[in-house]
Length: 79
Image (cartoon, rainbow, N blue to C red; front, side, top):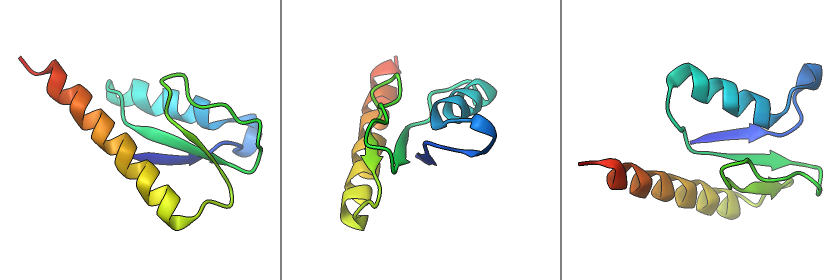
């Protein structure tokens, strides 16, 4: 699971980085975004955006939810 800060240097965003990494590896790596900006939108695939500061329990729960969702989708694609 990728946990990516939304606002990165040189004008890049989490959306840019996640898209590029997914293109490099040819798969949908589960991810979520953290941001200090309350207007940050979730990723296009619906991956959550969490507002910083993120409580560690909430982050852990979000990572687990995203991981389980990705595992279910992968299982559904199996023949």
